[in-house]
Length: 344
Image 1 (cartoon, helix red, strand yellow):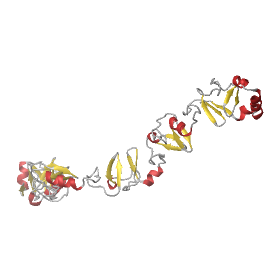
Image 2: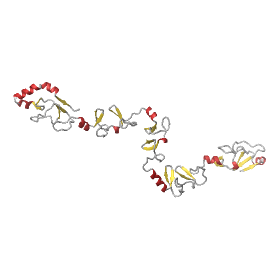
Image 3: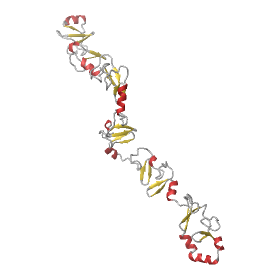
Image 4: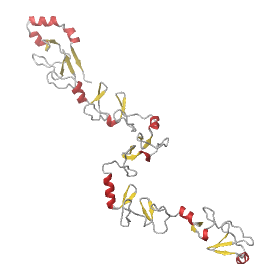
């Protein structure tokens, strides 16, 4: 930088001399500052950031703008994570920070990491110290964000554990706690979540944020949580049976509440024939005497609480037939004692 006090000599060399900043001419007896071929008024030759004169005439230039040393470092110079000072010269970039080479040391033993390092919780460690650090938290849940143990106020976001203070509510922007709720990839505080009027699954008692919702038993369910009360296998859209506020698959509903055939002792899954507090499946409802299969149109008689077809009934001794007929009126009997339940 040169200072020319003789304005006349400068104007002789260049009559159209102007200040490079304000583009105005120079007056008599006014100091001219020449910096790398550019001329300035003394009050124009200042830092582009703080507008103060350059101390000892020292300045830094970036993109045709001049800065004092302090502002240039603040704006453009890297900042050391270790000593908190600006870096001049070689820079080490690691773990999203800048370091002086002499400041890049193990977080635990302070040895220089010039031969490599291991990142742990946004801190650099040598191999030996990293092994010791990991053994401290071997059985603890580690935050997916900061890699430190989560002891209180843990939340799970997209399946991973976090400290709750890493997040804010999507609506009110308040810092979250362990009561936070995740809905469609966003986190909400409990108060804002309740205002969203989102259905709650009766199985897991968490919000249902999927498109598919099961409405059954007067409640809402995740598809995977609406399952048989006995075997706990999800229905996934298949037929279910309701009993006493619970849902069952067909097999276990019949096992628990279905009719058992008086002959084969198996659950009746089709049509049911009921007679004097007994049930038969279609394949086994037959005459007690001749084993001839009967159906809902077959006329039969109650012979000692057993069904007997008309053909066999007529073969019985007249005295026995009279006794049966007196004891049970056939028409009334068919209305009150026998029933046929057709499978739907």
